[in-house]
Length: 288
Image (tube, rainbow, N blue to C red; front, side):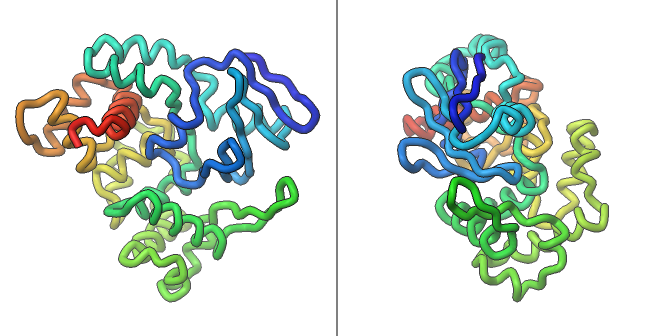
């Protein structure tokens, strides 16, 4: 990959295994929107407008320093996806899924933002999840300016833990309010040390997340994968369950059976396999 500055932008050339639509539209993030021919979003406390054109990627109004300290890791550019895709493509089903979603990259998201976002995602749909998170940031996040416009950072655990249920009612998250506050307080008081979980084993990290009210198996797996960098996670919701039953089983299975099957079949590449399968099946209405 070649990286260089041009005026106030960063240009990426010869980037392999990356597509903005594949990456932002596979259900792993909620603060990116398609606008003006590219994707605009706030992540890691920074705003970015990124375009994909003629084999190049243009990161508007950013610096080489910010690219190297924020976006290089966020977009997982230090990982060789060709090796992952080659390994997963040994499976006939995944070969088709990998080919279809060849530009998916797992975003390395802020762990606390990921924790709260996926608590909000439980029993919810994408448009409503995005709306709730937008209201959360607008009401309780730090405002900052970029490119002449105002944006909001994701609120900190300190900020959210000091709120009441009445305060939080403005985001219209319903029954999830109490789970958001409980999670923020657990992080604030040290009951849940997200930083240490990044270096802990997958099973231990998962067990700590499952102690939180509002965090079940699927939500925990998403946090482990997208916020803690643990690629063994294979989130199984109702859609992934149906996809797996259609592709790998003859009849209905429990989520536990599917999780065990995925763990044995995909190993530490389970998270990548899930993303390729979900995007491919959803876009082609396979098993749904």
